[in-house]
Amino acid sequence: MAVPSIDTAERRRRLGVRHALAPSHRAADPVAAARRLVGLHSTDPASVYLAVHARVDGVAAQDLAAELYDSRRLLRLLGMRRTMFVVPADLRAAIQASTLPRVANVHRNTLLKELAEIGIEDPGPWLDDVEASTLAALTARGSASATELVQDEPRLATSMRQSIDKPYEASVAITSRVLVLLGARGLVMRGRPGGSWVSRRYQWVPTARWLEQAGDPSVAALAPAVHALEHSFGPMTAAAEEVATGSAELVRRWLAAFGPAPVSDLKWWTGWTVAQTKQALAAVGAVEVALDDGPGVALPDDVGSTPDPGPWAALLPALDATPMGWQARDWFLGGHKAALFDTMGNIGPSIWVDGRIVGGWAQRKDGEIALALLEGIGAESQAQIDVAAASTAAFLGDTRFTPSFRTPTERRLTA
Image (cartoon, rainbow, N blue to C red):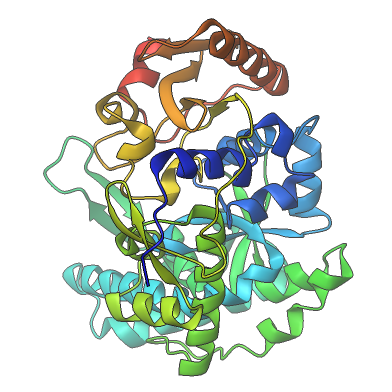
């Protein structure tokens, strides 16, 4: 049987349609937008809001805030590759089972090594006790800032040197490291921010309590499963059946959003081993396809063609889930990597036309949206970009933000 061929033009059409970027295929609301992309990258708070703005017509910042903090149909949690995501609530369990045990164990082992280096004897039991004490303090408070938790558990203030012998060397308390580890265990999560919607100062809450208090009953119904989590500490384990089920669900959603794609893209996006990736692909019946730049995989019923969505343009934020969904990006990035990515592989704000990147953008201190085109485009595309820039400026209003990871084009535009 011949292997189906899916060319770059089809992949670009799918990107415009499935990622809700073409005007005729916008998402209905913030939850639908997150679902289209599996989840939204959430390292930068502003990026979540700008990603939704690019995909939902007429959306306001308070609409997304209501889904995050009132109905809680969207959850902010640690996910693939130890990256922060905002995901539909019904995906939390699959990510927890398939991905977070390994994330937690890698994070824990690194922290144990560093604790030993600063003289903590037998750091394993010491760290386990700090985790348990921190969780107990947070449970007693109901919600708390990191500063408040240090008052309850002084060992969270234990300091370690990071980036030794580099210009940005610093001494940093282990507070956030312990909270990240508790988050990877599924026991705590970030709640409401302490400031505006671009604030990075979140309250921490026990996961079960956050779900119990959700305004949407279907989200509240998820809480008992979190209560049932084993509150023992040390290395994490997960039942093989739960891992397999969660992995298959995550792969199914990723292929629906980002397929077809090379297997290496999926492995990179999830952070899984080769074996886990292959097992999950087999579980969903993934089929081989021929891409313009090599072999790929797709869902078995997803090898047809996509109708042309028509011309479109979009301004996507730094670390947007679309460009960060693939590791092999030449088919939409072209030769623009050096201009739009930092040295660690993080993309800055990007300009898109019909499924490919054509430039970058930035917000200046006065609120102006500055554009930098990196290749020639037609008058119609330029007009669409100008409309998108004006819409982005109106959405942001008086809000100002700076991406966490600065890229050459973003720096140049704001200099």
